[in-house]
Amino acid sequence: MCLSIPSKIKSIDSEMNTCIVDTMGVERGASLDLIDQDVVVGDYVLLHIGFAMNKIDEEDAMESLKVYREIIDKMEEEDRLAAIAESENCPNR
Amino acid sequence: MNDELELKDLYDGFRDADTIKAFAKIIEEDAKKLGKTINIMEVCGGHTHTIMKYGIPQLLPDNINFIHGPGCPVCIMPKERIDSAYILSLQEDVILVTLGDMIKVPGSKGSLQDARAKGADVRFVYSPLDCIKIAKENPSKKVIFFAIGFETTTPMTCSLLEAVVKQEINNVYFHINHVTVPEVMKELIDSRDEHVDSYNNRIDAFLGPSHVSVISGSKIYEQFPEHYKRPVVVAGFEPVDVMQAISMLVKQFIENRCELEIEYKRLVSYDGNKRAQEMMDKYFKKVMFKWRGLGNIPTSGLELKDEYNKYNAKEIYKDVLPIEEIEDHKLCICGDILRGIANPPDCTVFGTACKPTKPIGSCMVSSEGACAAYYKYGNLLK
Ligand code: SF4
Ligand code: SF4
Image (tube, rainbow over the protein chains, first blue to last red):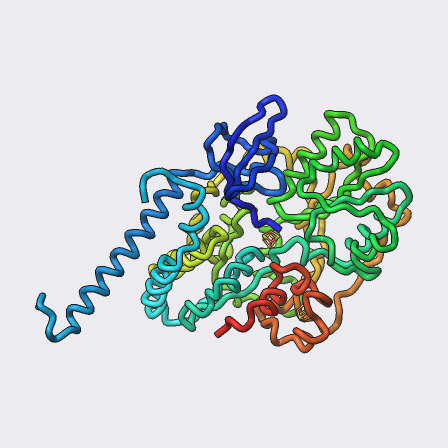
């Protein structure tokens, strides 16, 4: 029931305090009554039962994704080194 | 990946198979240093669902266990409250409005679906605010909003009430069934009944709920590492979030730390959504709530403050609403499952007399309940 979804703000109606959001290609209206930060078109928000709940911190999301990339790269590097160490006729040895 | 975030990254990035595997490897290495088994409770059913759907238990070493928490507002609704919804829906001139998940949950008289078949006007809305439109279109009817949910959905009920008060709409009423998370977490550690000792040491750490925490902030869990010595990591709902959070918890154990940390930083802060919290304080007071499967837990429920009694369906319909408590089914072991003592397959009626289409206990009721998740994804278990 609480499985809210990340959505992007397409337009804002400040008089009604509502917005239109895009959720993976589906557009729908949402209330901005519960947002305690300033939001602008292009911001990402979490949408839950018709309400934008909170702004998604883009910097933090990017940072996490970068960390994941680095972890994977590091593992791949370890795998490569392990493979080299194992291989008898590796030209790099 | 370029430096601009796209909606796609917010979905795919946190579900990426390679990232999940990378975390599995890190956790496996770290878990060797633990020297014991740790039992992690995911408080929220949204996490149970992710854990089962992505087969996370299979990816983890044997000394990391999950205990499935009580976290679903639909599952924990006691039968007498569902009976209240059922009875209210059958009153004259009433339109009963609630959120979709409540449809099939059976009370002692039947589900809302059954009430509908009997002619009741029961409507399931996408947003609580839809009640306003329904009330305006039906001025001679009484629209009763049967409100359910944790901290996540409570502010939405407040927003509806605020609109009703401001716009002077006089045909919207509320039946409040909101519950709060920290109280039930405390209850699970510190059960007051005679089984206390056997319960007490089962839960070693908590995965903090995602969207409850967006509203409440991580501060509501502070007492757990401090007072109860159970670390908490607030985690997002995507599988990568869950893996990262487990990795963070395991690291706390091997480094001998016991802290409150946030994995889901892109949405959760320490303070949470202040506006939403203020609204909750304005309209609600804390009351005792009886949880299906767990029994009475003091101050774990919310109720409208007395000054809003004229909107309170419990006051207006007090003559017809049930006052007797209904016992949980004898064979159902939901309480033990939620406390981490038993697993769904340990229940004698699991998958036979009790199925998602015909649930007996709370854990089978919503798709996010532990029994329902085992029923659906059980073949993925190790
Ligand atoms: S409804 Fe689902 S997502 Fe929301 S708290 Fe319950 S289990 Fe978690
Ligand atoms: S299988 Fe059904 S009866 Fe058994 S514990 Fe789960 S919900 Fe209760």
